Image (cartoon, rainbow, N blue to C red; front, side, top):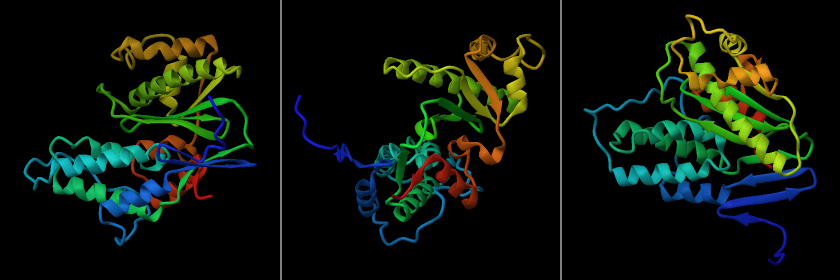
Length: 276
Protein backbone atom coordinates (compact mmCIF):
# COMPACT_ATOMS: atom_id res chain seq x y z
CA UNK A 1 0.00 0.00 0.00
CA UNK A 2 1.37 3.41 -0.93
CA UNK A 3 0.68 6.89 0.44
CA UNK A 4 -1.03 9.00 -2.22
CA UNK A 5 -1.52 12.16 -0.18
CA UNK A 6 -4.31 13.70 1.85
CA UNK A 7 -7.83 12.36 1.27
CA UNK A 8 -9.85 14.92 -0.68
CA UNK A 9 -12.44 12.91 -2.62
CA UNK A 10 -13.89 9.43 -2.21
CA UNK A 11 -16.95 7.93 -3.95
CA UNK A 12 -18.66 11.29 -4.33
CA UNK A 13 -17.71 12.47 -0.84
CA UNK A 14 -15.60 15.63 -0.67
CA UNK A 15 -13.39 15.79 2.41
CA UNK A 16 -11.91 19.01 3.78
CA UNK A 17 -9.37 18.42 6.54
CA UNK A 18 -8.59 21.45 8.70
CA UNK A 19 -6.75 22.08 11.94
CA UNK A 20 -9.97 22.31 13.98
CA UNK A 21 -11.96 19.53 12.31
CA UNK A 22 -13.08 17.67 9.19
CA UNK A 23 -15.90 18.69 6.86
CA UNK A 24 -17.57 16.07 4.64
CA UNK A 25 -19.91 17.15 1.86
CA UNK A 26 -21.39 15.96 -1.44
CA UNK A 27 -21.88 19.41 -2.97
CA UNK A 28 -20.77 18.41 -6.48
CA UNK A 29 -23.02 15.35 -6.42
CA UNK A 30 -25.93 17.45 -5.13
CA UNK A 31 -25.38 20.09 -7.80
CA UNK A 32 -25.38 17.46 -10.55
CA UNK A 33 -28.48 15.82 -9.05
CA UNK A 34 -30.49 19.04 -9.13
CA UNK A 35 -29.30 19.76 -12.69
CA UNK A 36 -30.12 16.24 -13.95
CA UNK A 37 -33.68 16.54 -12.67
CA UNK A 38 -34.13 19.95 -14.33
CA UNK A 39 -34.78 21.83 -11.10
CA UNK A 40 -31.72 24.11 -10.96
CA UNK A 41 -33.88 27.20 -11.63
CA UNK A 42 -36.80 26.13 -9.40
CA UNK A 43 -37.63 28.08 -6.26
CA UNK A 44 -35.91 26.66 -3.20
CA UNK A 45 -37.65 25.73 0.06
CA UNK A 46 -36.50 25.92 3.70
CA UNK A 47 -37.38 22.36 4.70
CA UNK A 48 -37.53 19.08 2.72
CA UNK A 49 -41.08 18.31 3.92
CA UNK A 50 -43.85 20.50 5.32
CA UNK A 51 -45.24 19.86 8.78
CA UNK A 52 -48.71 19.23 7.32
CA UNK A 53 -47.58 17.03 4.43
CA UNK A 54 -49.07 13.54 4.74
CA UNK A 55 -48.38 10.98 2.00
CA UNK A 56 -50.54 7.93 1.39
CA UNK A 57 -51.01 5.35 -1.36
CA UNK A 58 -53.85 7.21 -3.11
CA UNK A 59 -54.72 4.33 -5.43
CA UNK A 60 -57.09 6.44 -7.54
CA UNK A 61 -54.54 9.21 -8.24
CA UNK A 62 -52.62 9.65 -11.50
CA UNK A 63 -49.65 7.30 -11.77
CA UNK A 64 -46.16 8.42 -12.81
CA UNK A 65 -43.21 6.62 -14.39
CA UNK A 66 -41.89 4.19 -11.72
CA UNK A 67 -38.41 4.12 -13.30
CA UNK A 68 -38.06 7.90 -13.08
CA UNK A 69 -39.36 7.91 -9.51
CA UNK A 70 -36.99 5.14 -8.38
CA UNK A 71 -34.08 6.93 -10.04
CA UNK A 72 -34.81 10.09 -8.06
CA UNK A 73 -35.21 8.17 -4.80
CA UNK A 74 -31.95 6.25 -5.40
CA UNK A 75 -30.03 9.47 -6.06
CA UNK A 76 -31.39 11.07 -2.89
CA UNK A 77 -30.68 7.98 -0.78
CA UNK A 78 -26.99 8.19 -1.69
CA UNK A 79 -27.00 11.88 -0.76
CA UNK A 80 -28.07 10.97 2.80
CA UNK A 81 -24.49 9.75 3.35
CA UNK A 82 -23.61 13.33 4.24
CA UNK A 83 -27.07 14.90 4.54
CA UNK A 84 -28.98 13.34 7.45
CA UNK A 85 -31.39 16.29 7.32
CA UNK A 86 -33.18 14.68 4.34
CA UNK A 87 -33.11 11.14 5.76
CA UNK A 88 -36.70 11.16 7.04
CA UNK A 89 -38.35 12.79 4.03
CA UNK A 90 -36.53 10.56 1.53
CA UNK A 91 -37.43 7.48 3.59
CA UNK A 92 -41.12 8.41 3.54
CA UNK A 93 -41.14 8.92 -0.23
CA UNK A 94 -39.23 5.65 -0.75
CA UNK A 95 -42.22 3.68 0.59
CA UNK A 96 -44.16 4.34 -2.61
CA UNK A 97 -41.65 3.15 -5.22
CA UNK A 98 -43.81 0.22 -6.34
CA UNK A 99 -46.73 2.40 -7.45
CA UNK A 100 -45.81 6.11 -7.33
CA UNK A 101 -48.41 8.82 -7.93
CA UNK A 102 -48.19 12.49 -8.85
CA UNK A 103 -48.37 13.55 -5.19
CA UNK A 104 -45.38 11.34 -4.36
CA UNK A 105 -43.39 12.76 -7.28
CA UNK A 106 -44.23 16.29 -6.14
CA UNK A 107 -42.93 15.47 -2.65
CA UNK A 108 -39.66 14.17 -4.11
CA UNK A 109 -39.28 17.34 -6.21
CA UNK A 110 -39.72 19.43 -3.06
CA UNK A 111 -36.83 17.53 -1.46
CA UNK A 112 -34.66 18.21 -4.53
CA UNK A 113 -35.63 21.90 -4.42
CA UNK A 114 -34.52 21.93 -0.79
CA UNK A 115 -31.22 20.30 -1.79
CA UNK A 116 -30.84 22.96 -4.50
CA UNK A 117 -30.93 25.66 -1.83
CA UNK A 118 -28.49 23.85 0.48
CA UNK A 119 -26.04 22.39 -2.06
CA UNK A 120 -22.92 23.24 -0.05
CA UNK A 121 -24.18 21.74 3.21
CA UNK A 122 -22.35 18.81 4.80
CA UNK A 123 -21.35 17.37 8.17
CA UNK A 124 -18.79 19.07 10.38
CA UNK A 125 -16.68 16.88 12.70
CA UNK A 126 -15.06 19.11 15.28
CA UNK A 127 -11.74 18.33 16.98
CA UNK A 128 -13.10 20.03 20.11
CA UNK A 129 -14.93 16.99 21.45
CA UNK A 130 -14.57 13.86 23.58
CA UNK A 131 -14.90 10.12 22.90
CA UNK A 132 -18.06 9.40 24.89
CA UNK A 133 -20.87 7.62 23.06
CA UNK A 134 -24.43 8.92 23.51
CA UNK A 135 -27.69 8.21 21.73
CA UNK A 136 -30.89 10.18 21.13
CA UNK A 137 -34.03 8.11 20.64
CA UNK A 138 -37.42 9.30 19.47
CA UNK A 139 -40.48 7.76 17.88
CA UNK A 140 -43.16 8.82 15.52
CA UNK A 141 -42.50 5.71 13.51
CA UNK A 142 -38.97 5.07 14.83
CA UNK A 143 -35.62 6.80 14.74
CA UNK A 144 -32.39 7.42 16.58
CA UNK A 145 -29.14 9.29 16.30
CA UNK A 146 -25.81 8.40 17.88
CA UNK A 147 -23.06 10.85 18.81
CA UNK A 148 -19.40 10.40 19.64
CA UNK A 149 -18.75 13.37 21.88
CA UNK A 150 -20.63 16.17 20.11
CA UNK A 151 -20.18 14.76 16.59
CA UNK A 152 -22.87 12.83 14.74
CA UNK A 153 -21.49 9.42 13.69
CA UNK A 154 -24.62 7.34 13.04
CA UNK A 155 -28.27 8.02 12.25
CA UNK A 156 -31.23 5.77 11.63
CA UNK A 157 -34.84 6.31 10.60
CA UNK A 158 -37.18 3.38 10.02
CA UNK A 159 -40.84 2.51 10.09
CA UNK A 160 -41.43 0.11 12.97
CA UNK A 161 -42.42 -3.42 11.97
CA UNK A 162 -44.63 -3.91 15.03
CA UNK A 163 -47.92 -2.35 16.10
CA UNK A 164 -47.78 -0.26 19.26
CA UNK A 165 -50.77 0.52 21.45
CA UNK A 166 -49.39 3.70 23.04
CA UNK A 167 -46.80 6.45 22.59
CA UNK A 168 -44.86 5.06 25.56
CA UNK A 169 -44.59 1.67 23.88
CA UNK A 170 -43.45 3.34 20.64
CA UNK A 171 -40.72 5.26 22.46
CA UNK A 172 -39.69 2.18 24.48
CA UNK A 173 -39.22 0.05 21.35
CA UNK A 174 -37.32 2.87 19.63
CA UNK A 175 -35.04 3.19 22.68
CA UNK A 176 -34.28 -0.54 22.44
CA UNK A 177 -33.28 -0.10 18.79
CA UNK A 178 -31.03 2.81 19.74
CA UNK A 179 -29.53 0.72 22.56
CA UNK A 180 -28.64 -2.12 20.18
CA UNK A 181 -26.89 0.35 17.87
CA UNK A 182 -24.94 1.88 20.77
CA UNK A 183 -23.79 -1.54 22.01
CA UNK A 184 -22.46 -2.37 18.55
CA UNK A 185 -20.66 0.97 18.36
CA UNK A 186 -19.23 0.45 21.86
CA UNK A 187 -17.66 -2.82 20.75
CA UNK A 188 -16.33 -1.20 17.59
CA UNK A 189 -14.62 1.73 19.35
CA UNK A 190 -13.23 -0.69 21.96
CA UNK A 191 -11.44 -2.48 19.12
CA UNK A 192 -9.67 0.85 18.49
CA UNK A 193 -8.65 1.14 22.14
CA UNK A 194 -11.37 3.62 23.15
CA UNK A 195 -13.14 2.32 26.23
CA UNK A 196 -16.69 3.32 27.16
CA UNK A 197 -18.30 3.33 30.59
CA UNK A 198 -22.00 4.07 31.04
CA UNK A 199 -23.88 4.58 27.76
CA UNK A 200 -26.44 7.40 27.81
CA UNK A 201 -29.63 7.28 25.74
CA UNK A 202 -31.74 10.44 25.73
CA UNK A 203 -35.51 10.08 25.36
CA UNK A 204 -38.32 12.66 25.63
CA UNK A 205 -40.93 10.26 27.05
CA UNK A 206 -40.93 9.71 30.81
CA UNK A 207 -43.29 6.71 30.58
CA UNK A 208 -40.80 4.85 28.38
CA UNK A 209 -37.99 5.69 30.82
CA UNK A 210 -40.06 4.39 33.76
CA UNK A 211 -40.80 1.13 31.91
CA UNK A 212 -37.07 0.58 31.37
CA UNK A 213 -36.41 0.97 35.11
CA UNK A 214 -39.29 -1.27 36.24
CA UNK A 215 -38.31 -4.97 36.18
CA UNK A 216 -41.85 -6.09 37.04
CA UNK A 217 -44.24 -7.00 34.23
CA UNK A 218 -47.56 -5.24 34.66
CA UNK A 219 -50.71 -4.52 32.66
CA UNK A 220 -49.11 -1.68 30.69
CA UNK A 221 -46.23 -3.77 29.36
CA UNK A 222 -47.32 -7.41 29.36
CA UNK A 223 -48.36 -7.21 25.69
CA UNK A 224 -44.91 -5.98 24.56
CA UNK A 225 -42.81 -8.71 23.00
CA UNK A 226 -40.10 -10.07 25.30
CA UNK A 227 -37.31 -9.28 22.84
CA UNK A 228 -37.89 -5.55 23.37
CA UNK A 229 -37.24 -5.82 27.12
CA UNK A 230 -33.49 -6.47 26.93
CA UNK A 231 -32.95 -2.77 27.62
CA UNK A 232 -34.26 -3.37 31.17
CA UNK A 233 -31.44 -5.80 31.89
CA UNK A 234 -28.88 -3.34 30.58
CA UNK A 235 -30.28 -0.57 32.78
CA UNK A 236 -30.17 -2.89 35.83
CA UNK A 237 -26.58 -3.90 35.05
CA UNK A 238 -25.51 -0.27 34.77
CA UNK A 239 -24.50 -0.64 31.12
CA UNK A 240 -27.09 1.83 29.81
CA UNK A 241 -28.80 4.85 31.33
CA UNK A 242 -32.06 6.07 29.79
CA UNK A 243 -32.34 9.78 30.55
CA UNK A 244 -34.95 12.45 29.90
CA UNK A 245 -34.38 15.25 27.40
CA UNK A 246 -36.84 18.02 26.54
CA UNK A 247 -38.53 17.95 23.14
CA UNK A 248 -36.69 21.14 22.14
CA UNK A 249 -33.33 19.38 22.66
CA UNK A 250 -34.36 16.03 21.16
CA UNK A 251 -31.91 15.69 18.25
CA UNK A 252 -33.69 12.63 16.85
CA UNK A 253 -36.80 14.69 16.02
CA UNK A 254 -35.40 15.49 12.59
CA UNK A 255 -35.36 11.74 11.78
CA UNK A 256 -38.92 10.94 12.88
CA UNK A 257 -41.25 13.70 11.72
CA UNK A 258 -41.48 16.90 9.65
CA UNK A 259 -40.68 19.93 11.82
CA UNK A 260 -41.16 23.67 11.30
CA UNK A 261 -38.42 25.76 9.70
CA UNK A 262 -37.17 27.26 12.99
CA UNK A 263 -36.86 23.88 14.72
CA UNK A 264 -35.33 22.38 11.58
CA UNK A 265 -32.58 25.02 11.47
CA UNK A 266 -31.86 24.53 15.17
CA UNK A 267 -31.58 20.74 14.83
CA UNK A 268 -29.34 21.11 11.79
CA UNK A 269 -26.92 23.27 13.74
CA UNK A 270 -26.96 20.91 16.72
CA UNK A 271 -26.13 17.95 14.46
CA UNK A 272 -23.29 19.77 12.72
CA UNK A 273 -25.03 20.04 9.33
CA UNK A 274 -23.69 23.31 7.97
CA UNK A 275 -21.49 25.09 5.42
CA UNK A 276 -17.75 25.48 6.00
